[in-house]
Image 1 (cartoon, rainbow, N blue to C red):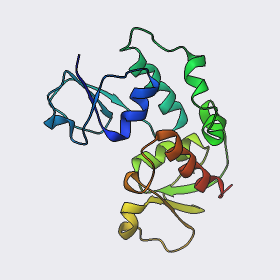
Image 2 (image 1 turned 30 degrees about the vertical axis):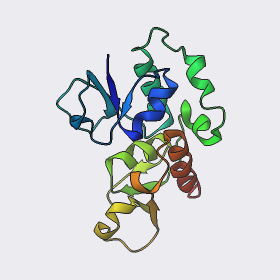
Image 3 (image 1 turned 120 degrees about the horizontal axis):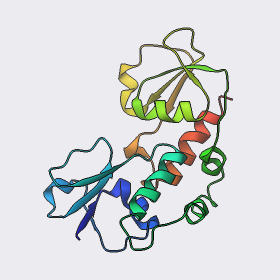
Image 4 (image 1 turned 90 degrees about the vertical axis):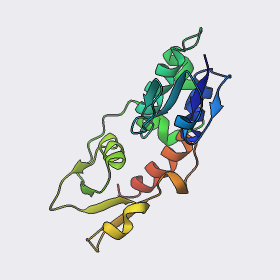
Length: 172
């Protein structure tokens, strides 16, 4: 089977134990049997769509992709990938409640702030959290928190989550 993945999903594919794959930023241009890509991506070939915004999503994605191999990973195998990422490990199986109201300008950031225990509201918020690519759309002027998007951070989902979560942890 010829697997095609995007640079954003390559680390998930590698962690899952797949070694024979092709990387293509635009997998629909590649001749493949299966694309492994982000959930919002569109392709005309069969695809396994993953989400990698939160530690639990990263965990589930590795688990899901490993089912394509002859050696599906168990939970302990996957948890070991989090050993070098303290913040990711902290939030892997968390159930935090912060009591901090935030307004959020992006779906992927909603996943993160909910995972960290913030409450999403549309008014009476303490912070406005937005991705860098929506900076021009933010109408508020106080307590702004800009989060780096896909283009400005590592493609490694663990490193990306560490960076984003560390920025938001400064609000706590």
